[in-house]
Length: 364
Image (cartoon, rainbow, N blue to C red; front, side, top):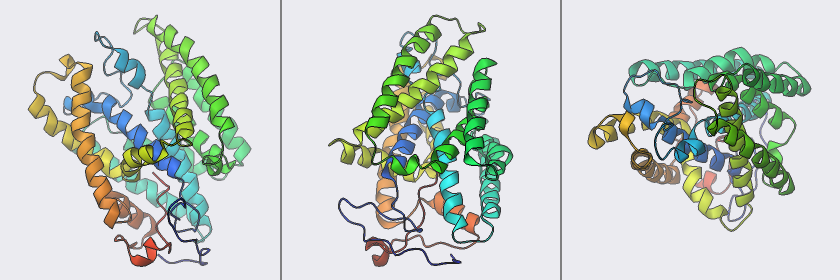
């Protein structure tokens, strides 16, 4: 990859010291953990829609509502895609910041990145599963996220609030919330909140309590409203956003405890290969579905979790082993190649292990 200016020489990576990115900035392990955690939840939500093979059910459709063990739906439905959408906005702004320091036209690079994602999403949609979300992300990125890079951060934050509140007021949920969540992630990055994730304890603790306090009545109102009634979408979407925020705050706090190594071991490999794992999950779910048999509509929550586990465990194993030898997942590497229009190194080298320049893997 060509550089207009050489990045600062990073410190050597080692125990207790975060691995640097290609820009010399330490990669935020919290983002990898959050992304991997969200990926697991999204897979659980997607198991039944994917199992229908070609159905048009969106990624945010309720997957277990109506079952006698619908508690899983209360914990999963529309609880994880907001995290993933927020992280997409975060990653977009991190890449813009990184590219802006090394190429004269960083927005052209981001445009190319989104167009490649659109092509991948369309292929996934028409070849495997109509509920693909990558196409939505690419289109919203092109229409909302990329133009927002010309706006001041205050305007981006205000627009994010409007685009999140408007669908809720109008009774929308799912995809209509994506533009606002993208912009919220971008605003948090531009205000420096993301860079302080690894250092703050009070903010996620206080914010988590507030979000949880709001999620309890929203969840109660959701369960007390029949599907199809006018207010259901409002409480469903609001509960999803609040619970998603509570999940994020809880994970950030847990990362400050002795559980941090466990969380990083479990979720970070999945998060660092999120694109590869998201796309391969479709094929794996379809394969497992043939072994399980029966109509997906009749599957219990236990069956859904069994199918998800049968996909996530081999994905985690492959991701962990792959990242020991290679810097990025295979599809992440190809996406980065297409983004920068230059072939990046893939195999880890002694220089990279010692703290030399490594690829920027903080983007989703």
